[in-house]
Image (cartoon, rainbow, N blue to C red; front, side, top):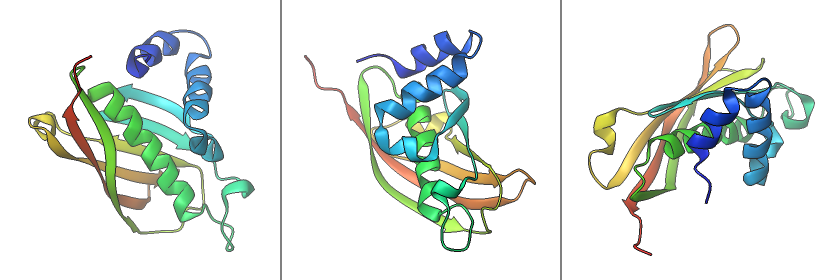
Length: 154
């Protein structure tokens, strides 16, 4: 299995590398393709990507659909987890709790963050996520819990 974080570091150093990485990342998990994430930054304990406000992911009132926003947040969380999880461990999403605070009327910046102390033990790791409009308004705020366990010996 390729090291997602190593691939990001390698590709992002090249012209158009972040764009190419974003396409590869969205193709690896096809449900991410619906929001067409554009990866901006990935490092341990932090990931950022943007999703565009486009008709294909609108709801009945013409704003970004809440589940599309959650899809972007989950993509950011996955990038953070790939960059942060120690090599001898693995992770899987366990749950998501979000609050919808404002209408998603612009492109959104999806951010995922953790603290090093969150990773001190095996088990549940809370990943803080938020989606921010271009005017700085937080439209969705929440926690995605991932379960971290030992990677089985091969």
